[in-house]
Length: 583
Image (cartoon, rainbow, N blue to C red; front, side, top):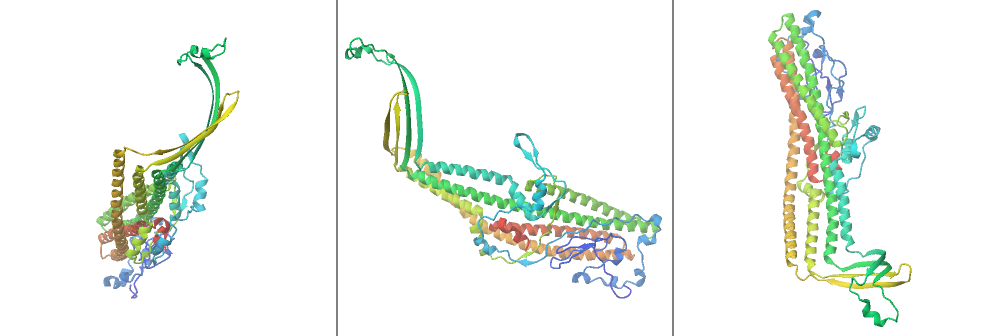
């Protein structure tokens, strides 16, 4: 300052993209449009408060004139630790954790291939988690409980987890998707039952029996036939005989339009279940990806809190040193102590939130609740180019699984309504059998039956009318739901676009606020060390910076979740979530 140059202040670490880290003097955040790759691995000491470098933002270079014109004597002012004897100096604060920063992906502005949505495969290609995830998880056998139930067990080492790996684990272990798989099997069985009514049925049957019959008990009198028998012939009324029979039975529906329409409706029902499964997969992707982003935001809050706590401890140490040296007041010490304790409370709450969110992420992925995670992906950030509303609507109308599922339900209901109409028509059938019959230990003779039939309903008007009313009500309900869903899709897309734009603006505003609040802390610390102000402006500046950093963390999380919701509303989330979050 005395030689006309401003002294710069360096933060402990600056991350790529949007940064939330702080040092002991200037807690700096870099705008998403400025990419830095600087980190501080050395311990933070009081000397860094003088030799650190100031932020490079043009807004932050407008240092107040009173600080730029500080006299050389103020440059020679030493810190409280240099004015106090070693006996009265508190211990130096510990070094910050390695790489105390929140990483963000490189900033870019690109348009996800939304316009190509109709040309994408209807079902995303199946993918598997990487070997860095499946290897450790596969090496641990699950805990076996009663009735064949198993529960996962955590690995000994933290699991290095990317966003894609988290999503794939969620798709593999989600309970809703497992239930959808069984529902698809059930509907497939019902479809086969409906198809069986249209094809010939062939069955084989056979029996062998020994019977003893009392003819007298059945009303037969031997004296009636005695004159017809030769003289001396006796006729017993107790008869015993053995019979064996074997035959093939054939039945065929020759004309049954209701059964045919029901079979077509069953095929559409199978399609409905498939669409529901795809819709549920999209919900799982959104849930797991959103929870992954939430845990990243929690880590950002914790690292911010840790860096702010280091600053508070250093400020408290300086206040104590000044009080012991007689150059400071007890009020300054109390103020810094309260601020440090409040920061510790906030940090404890942030760690608690992080622990619970991590458990919820583990639950969403279907792994052990106590599994330690190492999230290797940075906080994603890149802007979306303007997306035409009509393009997004057309993509949604061809890709939204809930809309396609509702259309399939309407088609199924229409086919069932046709089946009810055809119930007035006669049904023609053909059937019969061919076989042999005879004594078990005697001769056999062939026998057969061939018959045709027509089943014509004569008086079932009440049943037919009731079925028509039920089917018509279902058709009307589905048409109303489709009309409403088309309007909802446009409303959802418009709302998502507004959310994305607003959240992006909030990120920019929050980044600027962090930059300005960092400069405010820098200026307040300079004035405090120069003896111009007490600790009150420093504490107030640090509180402002803490709030600005918290808002930046929340704005980034809100921006990324808004992009996921936009992808969900256009029906391309599962296949393009990484395009929306990253380049």
